[in-house]
Length: 152
Ligand code: HEC
Image (cartoon, rainbow, N blue to C red; front, side, top):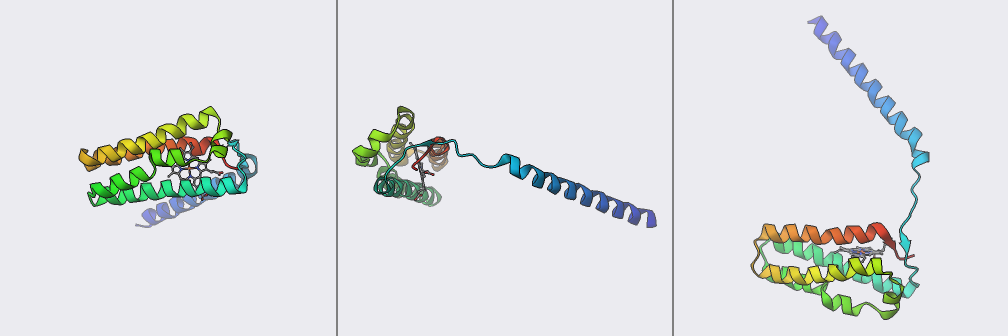
């Protein structure tokens, strides 16, 4: 019985030592891993930024409503919000912003709007799990572009 207790204490002390040494190491490393932002800067003006970021927030709203639509099997809702971020949004991009975006940006952006159009069509007949999977695939576009570009 007392052996069992001793073993318990020893394990506890050992575990504490491991925790302390791990956190000390994390603290040591913090200064050398200082964040460096290597994203390409689109250098938008304040008013271009306001317009561009508002479009981004409306894409997030599309995704939100699409998720709600998948959760409630509401095909109309999915299609409606997918269309908000489809070709209509692509056409609405101001010319001055378009002029500042390099080909690499357009190669991610163009297909993103097309994928929203495809999502609106898939909403008519695909199973909800397939729509969810396609939405996840579409969001790879969001991830790829955000990793590579910033507005200022
Ligand atoms: C072709 C490029 C591109 C694609 C695709 C893209 N974004 Fe963005 N997004 C950006 C850039 C650039 C910013 C600004 C980032 C910065 O400056 O730090 C941004 C910012 C945002 C913001 C912040 C808005 C604010 O008010 O600050 C949201 C939200 C957002 N994006 C949502 C999305 C969602 C959701 C998707 C996918 C459905 C998406 N974006 C796809 C380029 C893109």
